[in-house]
Image: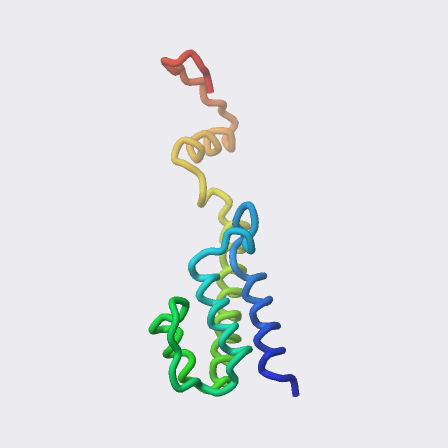
Length: 132
């Protein structure tokens, strides 16, 4: 069986793969959720048993609540969250694939509907001199 530190590292990497990408980079520009997950996994990897007192600016009440749980339970919860994130990502992928107009504006939907029946909408006039 693998050690809790190895499992935590593996789960953390799986979390990073499931989180949406950010520019310029997820590691260079971490989101608040990514920072919280990193703190929690760092605590899992360094303290296999719950500490008696933790003080510091990095630990919040939710992190302290997590540190009070056994390591095995925390790792199982992390796996459940990873399964949830993967399911959400797959759901969004399928939604975009089978409903391609879900992210279109109303104007774009009307234009594409007209093209579907063989009509091209006229180019609209804009006061700034540019035409669509």
